[in-house]
Length: 93
Image (cartoon, rainbow, N blue to C red):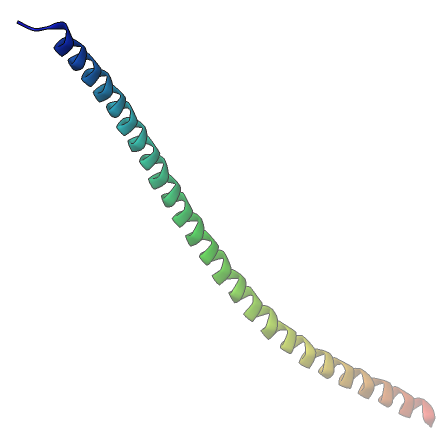
């Protein structure tokens, strides 16, 4: 023999359990989103690290090329000065 008070209590418990189930489902969804966001963040960090490494390589190459260009300019200037000197010497006579 069930009395109406007990039935109401069970009904309230069922409602509370349903709400708790809904909240736990929402928490699981949020957790899945966080895991996905974390994975994307790690992928972006990896890509940034790769790009930084490539930029460093380019900087090293540019520094080397700059030195080579400076030496080359010096050699070209010396050769040009020698050619002009030879021409001036030839016209001197």
